[in-house]
Length: 566
Image 1: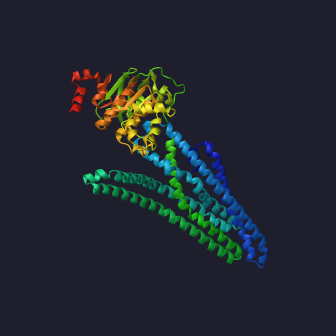
Image 2: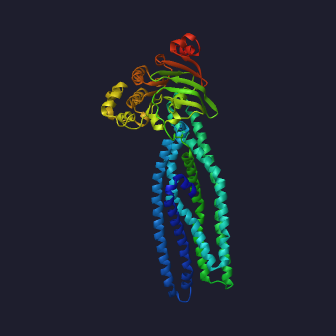
Image 3: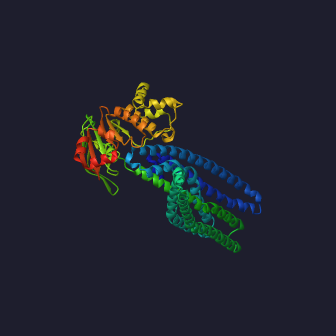
């Protein structure tokens, strides 16, 4: 557990963790050793001269005071280390997420990482602050007490020592038996959460279709599966709980019977028997807490394993000696790209001269958006090459490549802030005049004028307070402000009404002027104005040429065009 925690955190955090663990272990051992003073103390109290117990009583009080100070320092060290590690974990996870390729962020993975980065990190880092000290105390203190009993009477100590491997075996077997059930419970919990969100978001559609009862059954089934998974997890842990309780009670009973037998035989005093029984009783509480603490640690370990998997994910390699392209023409050279078992692009070869516009059209699933993603190096090709200015994108640094590319997606995401904040993402150091000019060129100024707050109007999370067309105008203004020489457009007008489409088209025309452009488009106006058109299907170029030329051939593109007109 500690080894995995240190691997997740990184070597720079190892010293404070090791110091904290050492302090917690010392505290637990001191607690166990302090109980050794109970033997002479009770012997004196139960003897003929109880006044002789005073020095032992003061010694026991001093030992308890030392333990209290150590406990305070170890708990404080755990909280401080936990806070430091939490901050460090957020920084390390954030740095890693910023280095991973955009293609890594699938919709399912985004949800998983959001849960992992929120309650997941808190749960994992709480190990040091809340779980490690009681776990070490539950292990080290009883072992120390068993050693104390062994010193005072080897027979009783040996009887107590026999319980140690039994407890260890029970804990190991419980951990193994509950691991699968815990993992299933976590998966069912994620699924149930997704169903709840889906049910809430789909209310308008479900009510319009009169399908609320059916959808409720799906949600109910998911919650029922979660209930069954939790029941299996509880039942799998039950033998460990019962076994541990039985072992602790059996140990205490054996010590009681053996101590009584030795006392009746005159081989041990009543004070020693009483003291050893007190020590044995003191062993019981931390041992019985091992089941609960162990379950929480297994949950934290599961989160640590998922964090470790994310942190071990290799980002796309950065070139050791980056090359800066001098031109901005684009080229695919026999590019092959597969996503899972499916080949998306199969030997794609095409080129776009600097300053020209390429339109990529074709049916859904043809690989059109993948062309844009490979140009922006969201992924690396499996074979062949993608070049910018004659330089393989893998030989260009990520910062340099992204500084040359402006991307406008079909689905625009805006951060929960003002319109100006979202536009300035294109170029944070831009002056106010440039920002206003970009907004005017994208016809965003029309939106700003009718909003109550103007430039300071809040767009809401994801831009929820703006319409789709208004969000698209913000995205175009952002791209205009960036002023990159290469522009990638991904069906930016496919879901807009005519008014917004006209405004967005005007902004796009200004954005494309004088730049190298690759656009994935279905709208007739956009395709018509392209310098070159390629028709993709099955990851291959079926037809290519100018719009008029392709229409005259009467092939796949002409059929596509006729369908669009219809």
